[in-house]
Structures are given as structure tokens and as C-alpha cells.
Length: 332
Ligand SMILES: NC(=O)c1ccc[n+]([C@@H]2O[C@H](COP(=O)([O-])OP(=O)(O)OC[C@H]3O[C@@H](n4cnc5c(N)ncnc54)[C@H](O)[C@@H]3O)[C@@H](O)[C@H]2O)c1
Image (cartoon, rainbow, N blue to C red; front, side, top):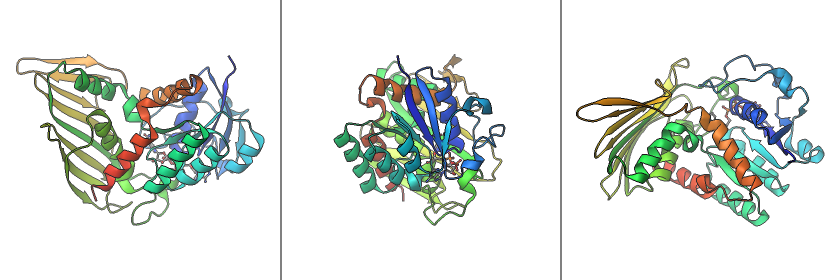
């Protein structure tokens, strides 16, 4: 079968992460990388860029890939099946619109668009052109979170009563994150950039809450770089979401959840990345689940699967990603 031709747009932390997974995927050919600073491409492959170690690849593996400084130049010269857009959130709308108007399927990094009407315009554009638009809500593809969703759906541990999700990181200081941020943050601050992972997971796994109580605190990036929220459902489920990036830059990233089901309590922490602890009143067990970092290859494989098989991205629809943005606004 002929390989699908793809381009990565924005070669920072996430662009490099997606490049690594594209290079490993036998169904894909990475034909182009687009970055407004093309001279930086390949320079920092040996360093850890970002707040997580998502894997590495060798410079030689991208030596034949065409490099462009603008998406327009790339589209003028390349025949692409899809592009992976991993620039900062304030450029998501402009570049995704250009790609869809050029007839190219798009995998776009989360968060979708901070402006709801822009998100709606992109959804309609993709629909009218019969193109795939998937937003990279990677947590939906992370094994420990997939396991939690399975337990919630199956009821095998009884009814879910309480779920607490946390996500903390240091102040980002790589790539464009170093640049001066606006009051709202060019990426919406930790609320829209980090806690959106948990907001999205909960609304996907459990649904829209009936009420939200929240406290936000300012940080260096925005007025909402810390969030402490309680979501309540009339069904009796309560969910707590807490986290932010107000800590010093080298503070280790940590994320996880504690879930209280009728019959067991469950604990997952990025500090114990491959296991979930399951506790009852009498005993405690560890269940191996697989590394959360597999979510990055999982989301890419799913996007490509949908593209090849002409399927909608039901596990991660743009309408659902936009719903997460709408919910994030309810916290401020
Ligand atoms: N899924 C996740 O776990 C995760 C983690 C971190 C960041 N993100 C998201 O990924 C996106 C990028 O974040 P990052 O940390 O990779 O940023 P980064 O600063 O490391 O990289 C952004 C890159 O985009 C390039 N760029 C900017 N504007 C451009 C343009 N108009 N055309 C071409 N290139 C352009 C920059 O030169 C830079 O190399 C953000 O939306 C962020 O929210 C997702």
C-alpha cells in the first residue's frame, strides 16, 4: 500500500514528539517539516524539550525531509494527505483554516481554538470539504486513562462515586513559552493548556456536569495558571480537578487520578507510570496498564486509521474538543 504523505507544522516539543511517532509508523512518509524558524530544526534533538520525556529520534532520520518556513510554501510544492499542526494555540485557527482550505486533512494539537466561533468555523469547513479534523486530546489515548474509562463504562467495580484528577508542572520555559505572555496567555494559561486534558477526559468519560465550583489563581502565564474545581453531577458523582504550572521551572511534571468506586478505590500516578493501584478494605493490588506516553503514538495511529478507512474520528471529534473549551470558560 502506498504510504500517506504527511507534514509536521511547528517543530517544537510537540512537533518533535509527533515526528518521532510518524517515523515509526510504516504507513506514513514524513515529506515536510514547516517551522517559522527553520534554522532551529534538528538542533535540539538531543535535549529534552518540554515538561515530559516523550522519546527521541536521530537527526539522520529527517535528513531527506523537505524544510519550509511557511505553510504556504509547503502546500505550493508538496502533495500531502495530512498535516500535523503543533504550533502555539494562538496560531491554531489560522494554520488549520489554511490547511483545510487547501484540501488537506488535519491533526491539530490541543487545545482546539480559544475562540469558540473560530472552532465552529473550522468544524464546518472540515465538514463541507469532507476532510478529517482531529484534535490531539492525548489523554483519551493514554492506557491508564483508557482503563479508567473502561471501568466507569463497564461498572465492574460498581458505580463511580468520586474522582480526583491532578496535573502539576513547572513554569514552561522551552520554545515559544519563554516569550512574553498576554494577560490571558497566548495559550490560555494552565487552565486552557494543561487542565484542559482533565476537563476533556472527564466530559468525554462521564459527561457535562450539572454544576461547577472553581477557584483560579494567577501565575506567570495568565490569570488562571492554577485551578481547583469541583464538578457535581445529579447522578451523585463528584469530580475534583486540580493543578497548574505555577511551580519553579524544574519542578517535575506529575499527573494522575484517584477514583472511588463502590467496590474498590483506584490510584494512578505518573510517578508509578506503568501500574494502577487497586485497593479494597482488605487488600491492595498493582495492575500493569502500560505507559501513558503510548498515548502519543496511539492518537496518531488512530488518526491515520480513520484517514485510511474513511471513518470519522469518533473517539475524538472536534465537536467534543470544542465542548471542552466551552467547559474551560465556565471556570473563570
Ligand atoms: N499534547 C500534549 O501533551 C502537549 C504538550 C505540550 C504542548 N502541547 C500543545 O502543542 C502546541 C505547541 O506547543 P509546544 O510546547 O510544542 O511549543 P514549542 O514552542 O515547543 O513549539 C512551537 C513551534 O512552532 C513554531 N511556529 C510558531 N508559529 C509558527 C508558524 N506560524 N508557522 C510555522 N511554525 C510556527 C515555533 O517556531 C516552534 O518551533 C500548543 O498548542 C500546546 O498547547 C500539547
